[in-house]
Image (tube, rainbow, N blue to C red):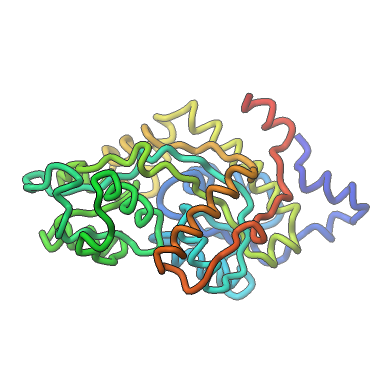
Amino acid sequence: MIARRTLLCAAAALPFAACRRTPPLRIGYQNNGLLLAAKARGAVEAALRPVPVAWALFPSGPPLLEALSVGGALSGVDVGGTGDTPPIFAQAAGARIVYIAAQPVSGTAAAIVVPRRSRLRTAADLRGAKLAFTRGSSAQAFVRAALATVGLGLDDVSAVNLTPVQARLAFAAGAIDAWAIWDPFLAAAEVELGARVLVAGAGLARSTSFVLANADAARAHPDLIMATLDALVETGRWAAAHRNDLAALIAGSGVPAAVASRIAARQELGLVPLTPAIVAAQQHIADTLFADHQLPGPVAVAPAMWHGWTPHPGERDKSR
């Protein structure tokens, strides 16, 4: 198959050298999900060759988006993936980012967990509890939704803003009562710390993860962005059909095998173009955050939506 990048260069009557990018395309990823699988398989490298690809690991969405706003030319990143809430906070801070593709997820890879012998048995028991989550991450919206099911709000709990690594340490030490978290940290807490699920994320944590790009990178290199997204579509299709192989790839990144198997079994890795419904859902989250005084001002998500990609025809046919 001829790479889409080559076809785009030909259509624009550009010499092949003009479509090359001397610095590498830098991709920010978390130790989980579609980008991790693509990295392990070398899928993006194969799609972009001879353009080099460099990868940078981040613990959560907010710091990844800070690097994405900077851009790869200044030791940031050009492309990265996060949940739905971090990009809104990044937009509010003036980040130079654009949404380039969406990944709908049901929430099965998120949960509010408690120690195995905790007295907490239902979401209602969280009133007054020390509940840890990463502020500005997708876990914040999940916590709000979980509390709302029992008539509670964030003011009814003692919210503790911790990164996933900090929260794991606090959870293991008994310094917090509950922890809202996602895979791979969720799976590791279940397997290694004996964490018990208090509130399952399925449905409540239903959301859309996003692949985003530095705005300048998307404008200057749309061919590379499209080729990268095509490679991610193919990776997601492969992962859905090869769960055991996906678990092996995750384990190859240093994750214990038992944890990797649990992660692979519930991952949802399908990638789709941005749609009006997805944009509207993201705007609703932004409006809710503003109404709750979580943002310094209103955020309009539509201007940051990059609609330059639809799946390559070959990948589109395979996904039907």
